[in-house]
Image 1 (cartoon, rainbow, N blue to C red):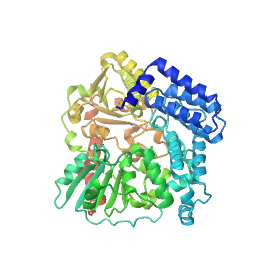
Image 2 (tube, helix red, strand yellow):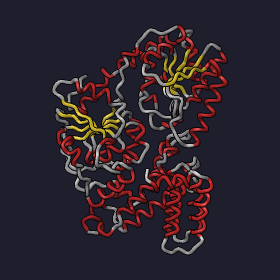
Image 3 (cartoon, rainbow, N blue to C red):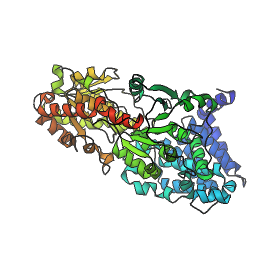
Image 4 (tube, helix red, strand yellow):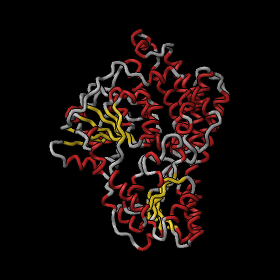
Length: 552
């Protein structure tokens, strides 16, 4: 860290230093500053405090500056910055929609053109007079507010999932947003010819594709390489969402693409097919590159569909897109309609379910389990609700929680939620066991007679399928966030799905003294292995990625 960075950390880390800093900013706002310098100092201070974990103080400084600012444009900029700090502090501003619209209005003003047609703007020469960088910054702010993670991955239902048309309405009315999604001179779509040289690209996260890479490296006639963009020299901040917003707007307005960095040019040129894992930063970046000849295949999971990244992707450059679930394919269709020009497929995640079939231990008869519970979206409180109802009938029931017990979300709402969950776990005593992370999930599932899916939303829920394949009885909550989008009944047999903890407990009790030994569990196990094991799923994935013919 630089000397300046250390000095700033010392100031912000000290209550007296923070008080002096914020007082100085507030005092400067009372002085005449028609050039906007006082507002700029307030934004800088807010950014400093927010970046060093003081969102509440950042919001307070920015709110003071916002009230004092007289210029409407600068006031709107301060409002957007203040709203973002409030979201980071765990509070959704009452005027959030106004802040989003204000940022979009500034983006439209920065472009300074009335035409909605990006091609017409470019051809008329007006693009040269538009302040694209300023417009991109305002678009980035609007997207950051609308898609703040606390709004889509918390305890409350994502506003995008709850009312997609209302959520997207301010963006649909924006000229700048229309330019963001334009694709002048689109690349010709590549056919699905047989892949011989496959490059798998991701930005740091190969979790769900690592085993697929291993499978493909054992496939005759296929060469496979991987490229982790987080390790590439010379990319700088190109993968930052702010920079991707800037690059995508330039692509939509002027047709300009990103040059291929010299450090990866040979690797990208080598491939005849590029599989980009996650529809996130890596996909947006690859889609904006100049001169790629390879067929581009994207794989999109649940997470990315609730971020702005699909809107920063040039879908005209993506030949095929594989979605993990139909629900989140449809979400992307609503936020990024240009995806309709891409060949779309739905193929579940790779899961070695046959390996989960092992003999149960005696404890399985009275053990329900939830695998993966460190995020609010998994809603482990619902699992505790089910346990309470089972123990009201038979105190031998216990709940096994497998996975990290450290909440993964940083916002206050998550900390408060998991504090309440932990209180209930402590109160339950030996009825709840927290197992922690394990590399041997099939082994841990030997103790489980009932496997739960308690989530607010899911795409594939591999750990549920692992539990079902182990022989455990599936009890799947009708994921409330996906009401109207299909939900689990679109993915699994309908009898797996329940709506309330009472219904969940009733399904378990109806399965008899040993739920894992009953007909319902055995039928579910056969369905899971026959329909979701990688041996059954792989031909569909190969048909898209390798260009192979899908087997019946």
